[in-house]
Length: 342
Ligand code: DAH
Image 1 (cartoon, rainbow, N blue to C red):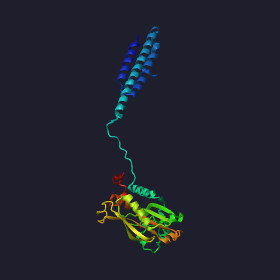
Image 2: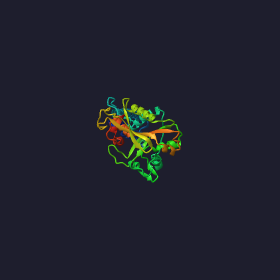
Image 3: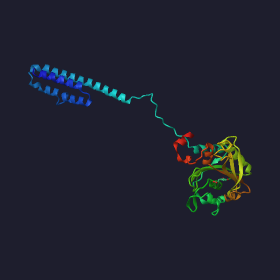
Image 4: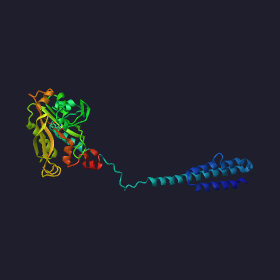
């Protein structure tokens, strides 16, 4: 049985290469090399015809045993290699649960939005509705119908961006008064928040874009006392119940009489500080009784109805409330600044 030693050598070689293999790919090559169509064991089997017939059964049996032995060794090796690979993977995917997690920071509302919501809620609680108006506005509504004709000096104070000779970026939210009165019958009780534009250079107290809130009340027997009461209530609610107010005579073309309102400085509580320039009071808003010709221009009979209006800078409400000395902070969107208001 000349072929027998060859067969045993084949088995030995196969087992040695299987056990020394460290990769699954290499193992597959070995399998093909031994058990494949052109493999060594298959070749040995083919050589059976050269063996004496009586020795063939024994030889065949041995070939089968060897095939089984090689297959078994392969399977064992595959399991072992897979085990090693799994351990390696687990090592890499290992999570240290004691490490601090990844922090996902949650956003917050911009301080101006918060201030607007507070203001809105106070006025809504007094029965006001919210009105909206366009930022690109007719000159007629922004100026003309508010008693500011083409040659009026108030136009210089609110120098604006003209889109066409008849269309401007609104310089204040007051044109929403006109839009409201043209659209609604009294009684009217609205506030109108929004962005306004003036051709101002940017500095710590000026910005070409800022925000205002307009207020308008029109009805029968609306008096200056109603105006004072409404604004006093708002300012006490907004800045605190100890807030004092001062109504100073002022001038606005669309109100008569007009007033400017100061309130106790929210920063120092009235003792005087850098924010209120030592006066203890700070100017907050402009207001007045709606001018009869403005009412009439909107088709509301000034003999029957009266009204009051007010306008205030939202940015100003915020800077005073928080003691912010530079309004640019409100527009720069620096997260270090904004995150203080969460
Ligand atoms: N529109 C004025 C401004 O921007 C503010 C203002 C003053 C509004 C008096 C009013 C008002 O409604 O009655 O300077």
